Image 1: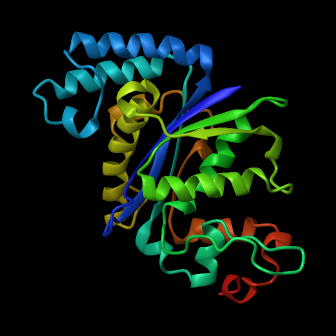
Image 2: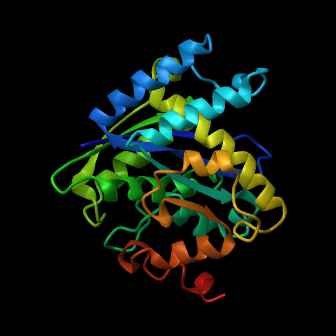
Length: 264
C-alpha cells in the first residue's frame, strides 16, 4: 500500500504551463518524514509550509535547503507531469477530449466527454497511472490531492471512471482519493514545495521552446528529485510528447476517431 500526495500549479487562466507534482511512498516512510519535516518547521518558527509565503522570508534559502534535505533523506519518491498549455491547444477538440479522459463504448460511442478546455487533466491521467505502477501486486495506491473545488469535483469523477475501466492496466491497484487540508498534511506541503520550484523551471524552458535542451535543473531541484526512481517519473509534455500519448491510447478506447489527426 502506498500513499501519494500531489499538488498542482498553472490551472489559472493565462497560465503557460500546467503541472502536477508530488511524492509517493509507504505509510511507514511517510510517518518518518512527517516527524522530520515538522521538526524543521518548528526550528524556523512555522506551523506549516506554504511555498508562496516561504519564498518571501529572509531565511528562505536556508529553510528550503533544510526541507529539501528532509525529503531526500526519506524513502518518498517524486513524480511530476506537466504540459505546455499552448501546445495542448494546438490539438483538435476531439484529440483534447481523449487527452483529458474520453473513451469509447464497445459500440463506438464516446463514453466520457473528457474536459477538452482544461489542460490540467492531460497530465492527471499519466501521473495517476505512473504512481499506480509502483503499487505492489495485490496492493493499492491512495491519492491525496491539493486542488480547488472546481477541479476537485471533476478529478474525483475522472478518477472513479479510470478505476472502473476494466482495460486499465492497473485497475486492481486503485485506492481512494481525498482532498485534505494542506495545513494539516505534511505530504501535501512537500508536494507544494516541489510543484512550486519545478513550475518556475518549466516556465523558463517553455518560454525558450526548450523543455529538455536547456542546462540541467538547479541544485535545489536535483535534491528534491534525489529519490527519483525512473526518468519517466518526471515528464514535461510538449506537442510531440502529447501526440505520442495519443498514439498509445488503445484502439478499442478511441476507435478510429483520431486517425485523421494522428496522420498529420
